[in-house]
Image (cartoon, rainbow, N blue to C red; front, side, top):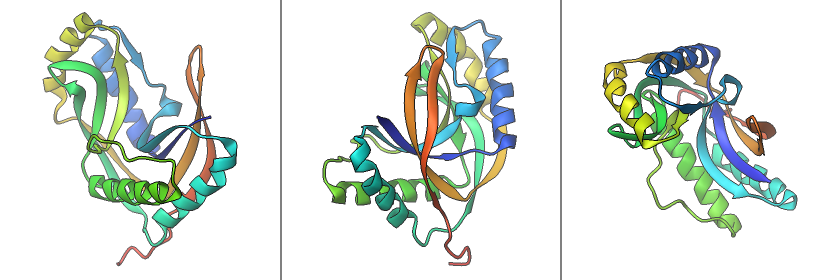
Length: 191
């Protein structure tokens, strides 16, 4: 099954992201917007994982999160991949907490590679909240003019207290995510 590892965002950031999607939609650009119940920050995308491999994946995530404490995550700013001038994927940025997400990403990757059968992604990890996927170059041009107006957008703060392993089933209406496993962050926040 298609599997990925992520953290969820809180209701405040989710509500703000939905409002931002509505503002960007006013450009008339055709975008496949991420549904509110599907919003998350991906740490590692694994792709197809055999059911028999899942217990080892859960152990690797638990090892990677051991000793990690809950931390604040602030969602702010807007951007796009590959660039804001040629947007294909629209995203909200992560300011506070980005360093902790990067550390979790690296630790999880290390434990997965140690299992064998998993490789590190070659591109650098950029923590972000995907808002939508642009359907055409013309639509991207409409959004490229709008994105600079929202660079100071503030989506609010949440607290990351667990890392989740999700399955992703592609349906006609979009992906359906199911939580397969959880690893709580139980470390001491003072360390």
